[in-house]
Each structure stands twice: as C-alpha cells, then as structure tokens.
Length: 104
Image (cartoon, rainbow, N blue to C red; front, top):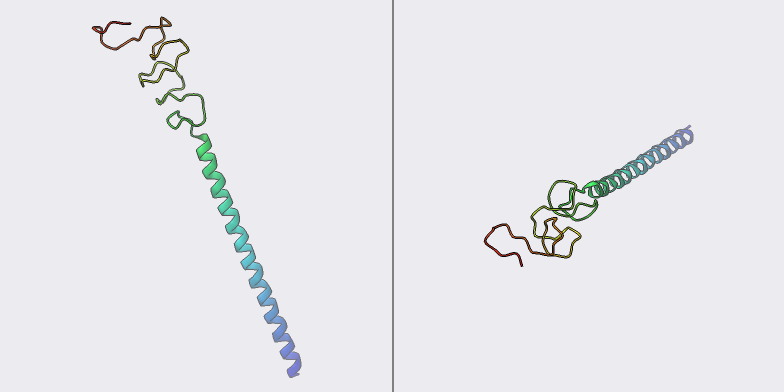
C-alpha cells in the first residue's frame, strides 16, 4: 500500500513538473512573440514616416510639410534649372528677396 501511494505521489509530482515546464515554455514563447511584434511595429513606424523632414522615404525632401519638392525658401535648390536659387524661373540669375540687389 505504501508503495502504491509513493508511486502515485511521484507520478503526480512529475505531472506537476511537466505542467510547470509547459507553462514556462508558453510564457517564453509569448514574450518572444511580443518582442518581435514590438520590433516590427517600430520598424513600420520608421518606414511610414515620410513627411520630408527626415530625408528618408517619400519624395519630398525639402523640409516643409507639403508633398512638393519646389519653391520652399529653405536655401536648397530643388528645381531643375541651371542656377542656384529655389525659384522657378529658368533664367540662370540668382534671385534675391530684396529688390536692391542686382540679379547677376
């Protein structure tokens, strides 16, 4: 009789240990999945951000919040003519904001 009860106790203990191990494994898997999801979400956030201020993603790199790439007064020449200004004139003169500067 004693032997029987000991065996039962051992089997019960083994079952409990197995259950605990399974639970631990499940928890670890869940944690790993959560971490992967967090990383993927962060990457998606970085990829979606294309307001132009970061220069990564999208076509609008001129630093303002619209979706064009022209005439924004940031000092960067975004237009396909041969001068160094940011105004759409195609006449190869440097345009300044004040009128008393000669356009050479």
